Length: 183
Image 1 (cartoon, rainbow, N blue to C red):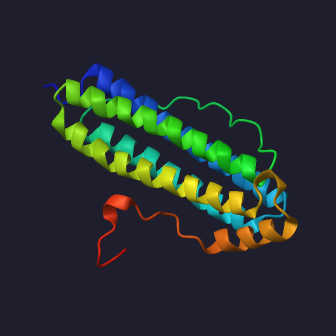
Image 2: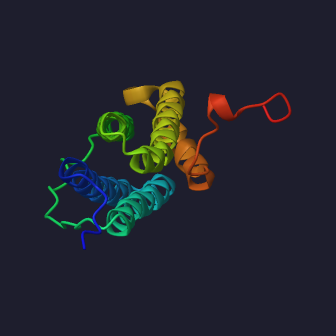
């Protein structure tokens, strides 16, 4: 009896996204290690937490593939890109990576819509919202760095940013979630 309820194309796309999430975890891990080596313990802590979050995304997809009866394909992930050259560059790279990941999520959403796989389409809505949150958070951090002076940020400004990120929550308030009661 056939128990797989994913098309071959959707199963492959989800496996590819699972690998992409594992790669994202490695990127955050690499950038966190870089930040720690540069003396930015708060920034490193923030990035280490995000490495774990990306791994959780990978596991969420892996479990979904299994629950739908398809095969999980664990493959090697690429090495992370080169280390950032500055705190500003680090968060520019983070933002660019998140935008790229959003495009990959949208591809699966569109594919599941076109195939009328409403269960997968619904499953992927969590990732759509998550990517909105990730991009918003990265942009908020880039705004803070811009206020600090961007590439020309002073040591004092970067110290304050580092201390701020040590306590910064891992999520962002999205415009669609704001109400008059909770602005």
